Length: 426
Ligand SMILES: *Cc1c(COP(=O)(O)O)cnc(C)c1O
Image 1 (cartoon, rainbow, N blue to C red):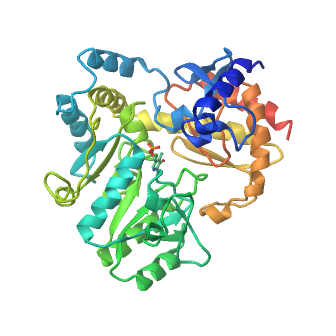
Image 2 (image 1 turned 90 degrees about the vertical axis):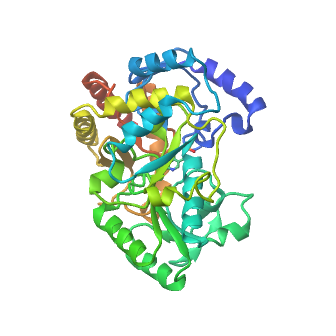
Image 3 (image 1 turned 135 degrees about the vertical axis):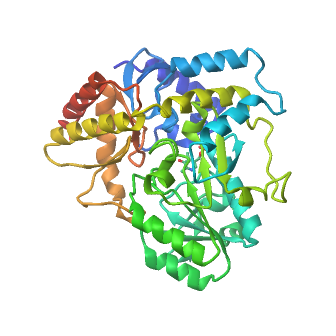
């Protein structure tokens, strides 16, 4: 496989950007080698700068649930952008996307559009603090919520801890407002509420954590969080930036019928454009400026081009059987890969159209501690084998794969064959 053009572009990129990229995981550091520069995509396929073709399961890290360059989305974008790309004033399209979401989602009554998942989470945290007039927040080790200062915090030693920042540049005083506990551990959450009684503004969780492997929590644990938050006047935030519109139109809230106080969205909501959102009840949302005293704004928020992409994409998701068919495809893929996993080198965990390859002997992996960092060497070998055989995954063993509605049975069969060939090297 010739990848010389990608290599050349990467050398150039390194002179412009730290590590040659505009978001760290793209640099291929955890799988080694040079990142592929992508030239174009259509449906489930992408082509790199050297003309190599791949079946893509990264799907831009989740947003492209209809696949690349979907015609319906492109037509909507084309029509809108010719009328102007941004006004910094309200447009009808914001109403339309909000109506589409709110009329199909019983868990939130009002929302606010922003331009990324990080922004949605950052605003939701501020809202929770403003609403409860408390400062501390509780997060779980193994959940990712974007690059918000107070959430770039990892667990210290002990069950209930103030974490250590996982990035330079985050003041210790910020870190001291963030409590970090392990996933799927009721006792740790209970202890936190004892230790910090009446101090915790919110619990934030990815209800289906999918940024550090796929750490399935199950309904019961989430139900427990709902109850303990209610009992302590603490808000429950579901960060559904990855799971929203992916595990059903109403995400995990809808899947398990659990009502969080605030939900954050991103990724799929913008049809491939930079959009995020946070939503809650009318009462909670009335605290946001200009109605209330929690300030939050954005020059390009509700951008018409992005709104029209969102409308076009979400409209497709509401069609009958959309999610059922997507899940069936994923189940077919997972079963096929497991069949060629003759030596049982890995487990495949999946939910809806998300799957994760885990090199582990464990029957279930539900907390960050369950992941064996040493196993990532196997993923690396598998990864490059798959690339050679025309299959592109997100370049890290901690990342999940996404199936889109554009993946065909032929794609899935080719992928299974690619796994079979690649596993031979392991
Ligand atoms: C991707 C993601 C974010 C961050 O969104 P960006 O658009 O990358 O800022 C936050 N939370 C979760 C759960 C995510 O998956």
